[in-house]
Length: 125
Image 1 (tube, rainbow, N blue to C red):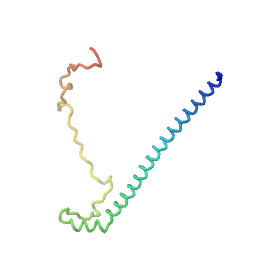
Image 2 (image 1 turned 90 degrees about the vertical axis):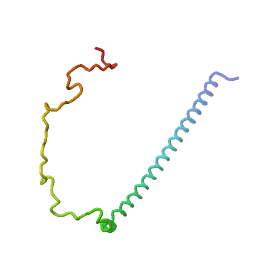
Image 3 (image 1 turned 90 degrees about the horizontal axis):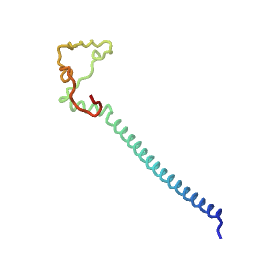
Image 4 (image 1 turned 30 degrees about the vertical axis):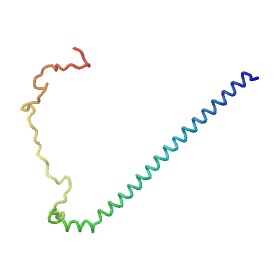
């Protein structure tokens, strides 16, 4: 009734159908994952836009001026004077204070000069 070639061809067709279904299933899963990521990116972009709008509202000069006037007594803020603005090369050099190395105790193995007796699995003496 069936020849060997018929059975082989039926097996090949069933295998091809299974591989095609498996590939389609993986592609659909990848597409769903990609859509979820795109939705998350869109939400994050919207959040960034909202935060930028909030930042621009919070940093308006009129609002900041009102806050300075309200909290002037507590914060004691003063305008920056022109003499306070300098370049980096105009700043005074910091004094270098280096302690002598010999006068300081280092502690641990550096003081005793002995052999560390801690047993580890790395090196056997």
